[in-house]
Length: 388
Image 1: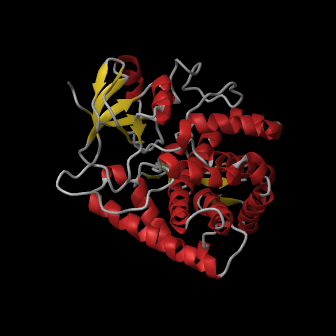
Image 2: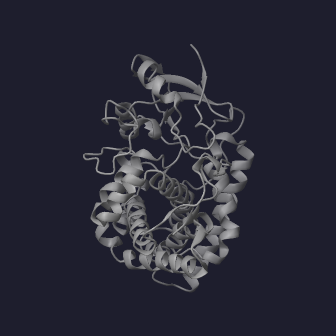
Image 3: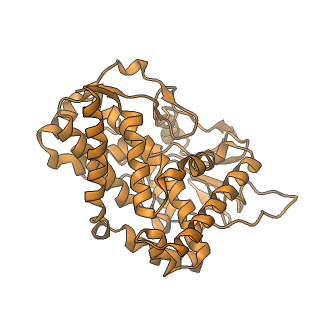
């Protein structure tokens, strides 16, 4: 059987890789090799990706336990929320999920709007042009995450490098991954101790009354891995897409009430991440005629599923009015992304504030000369020079 490399996006794009078009048509379940040399079964069709996330026979492994080391036991490590299973997962999810529902997050909308407005005001006070990446795209998601979870913004140079390493885990040696994971857990543990001494109204303190200390440490690590760089990457890419589709952008300017539906399309059209989701088969099973053995890795590709013509009409076209829009951006099943509503809210408010505060916003350089940050699977423009 042919072993293919995991497809990569073209340089200077967020993806998804064009190679998935052929795989969806001809080889929807195919063995692929990851950047770290490990192999897994790549799933590229919408139907298969949705089914894989909901299949109890496919379990997300611990970062410290995959790839499996034949000569040693996995090193001890707290599971992130993404990796929890069984009773622990149910217990933690019951405590965490109510904090991220739409009604509960309404209290964050004014705060997100205030942060976004502050950033836009700083840009307009400095002139009629700016680079959106350092001025808006990078600080907004981090400040929102800090305000919600209780992370100190001033500690960002401590925890962000470890977070970025973990997001590239599928392409790195295990020792590098473990070093970053332990460092991030140590930071989270010290932060929880600080919150126990000086309680406040952030989520860390709310959860300390409902969960074990280790569970809260895992929550902090999970939020850093799932809630920061993914939102930075997606916000930057979504803004670039809108600025290079002026007709579609004009629809939102003329009628801001369209923005929530447009956000769903941006979540589908722009890969929230090109990182590979890794699941491990707990028993033998068959997928589209392929025999998957217990212990094999299965790699459902969300970015490919969201461009599947079997699920979306004209999937490579940006349609900000697309409805229905059954994208798989936030996964499915028991590990459906807890922060999905926060991501939606943040992007909605960001667009509302940018379009009202900078009504004449446009790119200040040709899109083909924009440099890209391709240092992690979360590809994004490294610069977005705009004028208004």
